[in-house]
Each structure stands twice: as C-alpha cells, then as structure tokens.
Length: 215
Image (cartoon, rainbow, N blue to C red; front, side):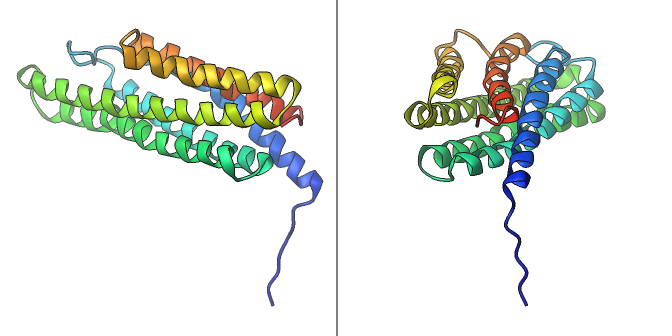
C-alpha cells in the first residue's frame, strides 16, 4: 500500500514563512561573515588568520546551502517552470563556483600553508588565489543570471511591490556582474562585500515578502 500526503494550505504557508525567515537570516549572516573575512590573498603575504579563513568559508558554504533550500520553496510557490525554473538552475550552478572558491581559500590554501614553506612558495599561493577569484566570479555571474531571470518573472507575472522587487532583482543581478566584468570592482574583501551585500539585499527582501505571505 502506498501512502501519500498532500500538504495542507496551512503547512504550505508555514513552510513558505520558514523559507522566508531563513532567507532573511542568511542574508544578514552573509554580510556579517564577509565583514570578518581575513585579508592577504591578493598577491601579498598569505593571511595570518588561516583558521579564520576556514571558518568564514565554511560558514558561507552553509549559508548558501540553506538559501538553496529556501529558493526551492520559493520556486515551488511561484511555479516550477519558465523563468523561475531557469533562475533556479542558474542559482544552483552558481553554487559550483562558490563551493570551489570556498574549498580553495578555506581548506586547500590553509592546508598548504601548514605543510610547506610559505615564503618559498609564493607563486603557488598566487595560483590558488587566482583560482579562488575565477571560481568566485563564476558564482557571481550565475547568481546575477538567477536574479535577472527571477526578476523578469516577477515583472511579468507579479503586481505591486513584488513587481518592484522584480525590477530590483534585475538591477542587482546585472550591476554587480557588470561591475566585476568591467573591472570596476574586484573580488578582494571589499569588492566581495559590496557584491554579496547587493545579492543579499534581494534575497532578504524576497524573504520578507515570503514571511508576510506575499510571495
């Protein structure tokens, strides 16, 4: 005998509010965590706070994973098709870049620094930094694509504040990616803080609207 359970409207609403709360909380935590990111990767001396780097990148990976779950709920509520589905695929792909960048700076680089002569292996750490930047940029571009697609879906199908949110999603999807591509900002600590802060703003407002039961 097969047992099935169809979520009640109350269950679905509660799940939506939970996802919204997580999006809002993770957005705040991402900005807070980036504010504590150690410096020293950008071609200079390898950072002193290697254990802090591992903690920061592990936390950022966990936050992204929670956001992924929350956006699954968002997609289910908005309809798993068309622009919304395409946006989710782009967001999932962004995680490949974010995860690889986090592994390089949070695990591989600290592991190397603990086992080899850092001063004599400067070029190796420049290489790991360059790899981090490339993978992180991949994540930024695909997050931007996700926000543009979700934003267009809201502009097309939503009304009122949610349509304005859609316009904001397009802006916050395009501007950080364009700024990075054009070289106006880089993914050093300060540039990443601005880019991830912009991305977190959109996610936070989506979370607020889900908490209010408006998305």
